Length: 381
Ligand SMILES: NC(=O)c1ccc[n+]([C@@H]2O[C@H](COP(=O)([O-])OP(=O)(O)OC[C@H]3O[C@@H](n4cnc5c(N)ncnc54)[C@H](O)[C@@H]3O)[C@@H](O)[C@H]2O)c1
Image 1 (cartoon, rainbow, N blue to C red):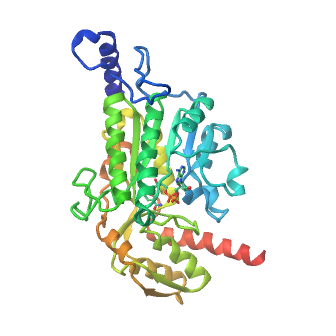
Image 2 (spheres, helix red, strand yellow):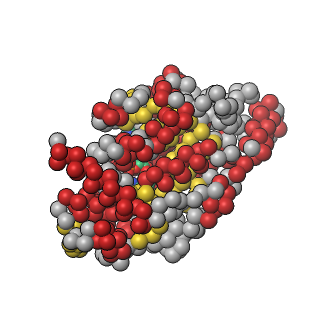
Image 3 (tube, rainbow, N blue to C red):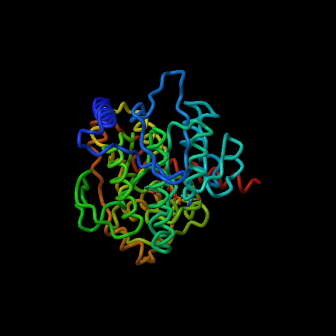
């Protein structure tokens, strides 16, 4: 970690020699009582590294798509279970403002935490000796447009709390970004890591803000910030969270339950997508990647790219009687039309060896297997 070591050295130097004319380096620590605190000269400016026996203690502000799924089978592929298996059950704590379903609650530690409550967050990090923070809580694109001020609070103010906590306590911090962080003036086919980013949703604006703030904290304070721009994530969750790519989840449920699907995007709307198992594996791999393999702090990741028509055709190979109609939601269509059609993730593949497992045929087969078996269980019950 030569960059971080150098930063740490420079920071210590600056603190030890305040007469050098440089600005003293301060971590953006919140006021506990009345004045912002400065970091002491022996403070660590990088996140802790771990030996085989000394596992990270992980706090995950939950990924609803995995935790609040009504599909219990989906849970076997969860990020937090992956982390728990890897680092020990008690070393991975989940948090949300919503009551967890029983399979989540009984699977290991779960804590109430509102990311807008800075002191509560700090208490959790201190009391549990947290070392990694995986921050998923956010309002997604369509929901964000319906409630801009709440999206601004959760996605921007909440992120500020998370960044400050992580910087204060030397945590390794993961924040997901999205294809929604690009806009109509970005190159769309393919979209590279570095290009114009002028999104037109509060969700996109807040994610660009998160990318830039995380990178700024990395350069300014040595925060071990890591960020992946996810494409649309597809899982067996039956309650999509208000995203523009939700049609690609809903089609499977409707196909199995009713044999009919009404799509709210045009048939030729091409968007990058990924099966959740690839997404979760990418996240863990990026979190574990040695810092010196990361030439950037924010990477695109991708698996496949398809249109509603192509997805429907692939589903119809398994369920030939599926009827698909289109009733376009203008808000979601406008959002989708401003997003990347294809995502260039060559930097992630080159730097830390990202490789997806699921293409469209495997995705369709896996989703139908899960949803089909869940619905068979429901019918038996
Ligand atoms: N789902 C996708 O296709 C997709 C794609 C790209 C990026 N992402 C990113 O992944 C993350 C999770 O997405 P998701 O699909 O699970 O979203 P979701 O809407 O399903 O879940 C978000 C969670 O945030 C929680 N939350 C809201 N306000 C909160 C607060 N004040 N304090 C604590 N928790 C709060 C909600 O209770 C919910 O459980 C988001 O950051 C999103 O930007 C998702």
